[in-house]
Amino acid sequence: MKLPLNDQEQFGLRLGLVARLWRAEIDRRLATFGLTESRWLTLLHLSRLDEAATQRELAEAVGVRGPTLVRTLDRLEAEGLIERRTEASDRRAKTVHLRAEAAPVLERIETTVAAVRAEIFSDISHAEVTTCLKVFEKIAGKLGGAETAMQLMHDIQMDR
Image 1: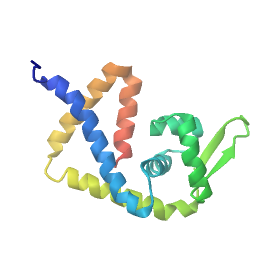
Image 2: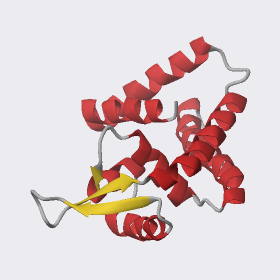
Image 3: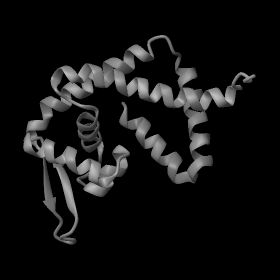
Image 4: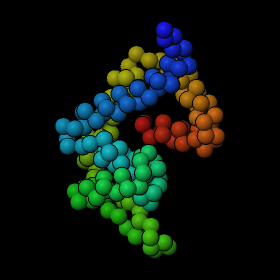
């Protein structure tokens, strides 16, 4: 006989589920514009970085391995949305830059992300969100120290 999951067990399972459902809803809405999750997520992260990122840094921000990102970047570059430049200081490293042609695509992405977020939080209070953020920060700190907690906060700010 299986015992029911306790609250902590449910928390971990639901956390992953909510993240997948949230991305899937954005993905579903952006699919009408021909955008896959890998493409819109890459463009969104790139647009929110302070400066041009190396392919390695961008892969870390998106949460994928370098070779996976390369295929996405190849397609985005072929569509004229990004360009890769060789770094003068390290000819092996390439930085990724948005092109002006990406602006309307990014506007669609930002509008869609904001709409989904508004619907999700429509009946959730600011206090509930603040409490949840504090819990996430504590958990992230225990899993990977201060760096993980700071990255979590960065990722949270990315969805604004």
